[in-house]
Image (tube, rainbow, N blue to C red; front, side):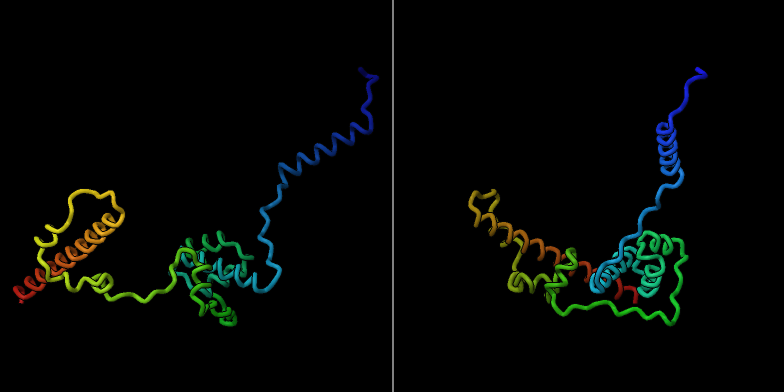
Length: 193
């Protein structure tokens, strides 16, 4: 056993493998920061998307403070969120003037950039006007209940008509309940005075 020698190649192999193991265990690389976008428009979109995401979670946070913190930490959204949660977000200096949030005049582009927001539609004053139920407001409950069929029809048009009647009846019933509640509140207010 005393005659056995370690060859130079096996010694180099042991040193290299040992070095790789030590590097992997003790000097693991830190998570890479997101790469900066190539063009200015992409950078602006990425920054605005990050600000919007943070403001959805923390609506009380100031947009300037969020932009300042994102700029300081390289766009790290979790770090900015952690600072907001712990109350350690710094107010930006007066010299920091970020560009205003982008506004789009085209509602189609807004609907594309925000999939959960519906495009702007002018609101109807109420459901009665929207479904044109003004003439049915004064109709009696008995006449409405007598006209509706009791069974589910196999005809598509009859089912659709029945469902629309039910929708109209529910809207009118809700209106009657609201009017009764308002009358009751007005009655109790008058008694207290």
